[in-house]
Figure 1 (cartoon, rainbow, N blue to C red):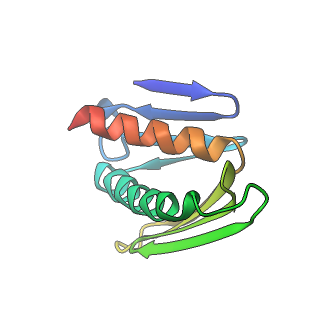
Figure 2: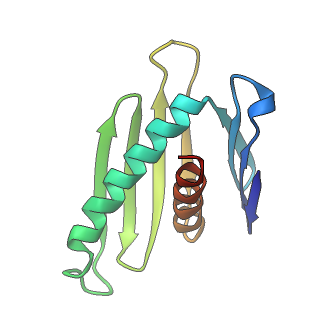
Length: 123
């Protein structure tokens, strides 16, 4: 399963084995294990829940910064109520790798909804 948009892509391929999910934005890509992707999905759902709780109270020009950490992931949402970016940090508990991702406006919102849709279509 491959989903693509302008400057981003999301791929699921269980035939690849251990690293069966790929997330790419602009000029980088990273492969994730299924449980890492699931943890990312849960983190993004929690972050979105926090955002939606305050979104209607924000003025259009008001700046917001939300942070959430649920190891091995850390996420930071920055922007305004109708456009935002995401910075994600992964610190491996298996000491195999660590990395940081940045999803700019408008890639962040597109990737969030595609990750949500992809995970929920499997369960």
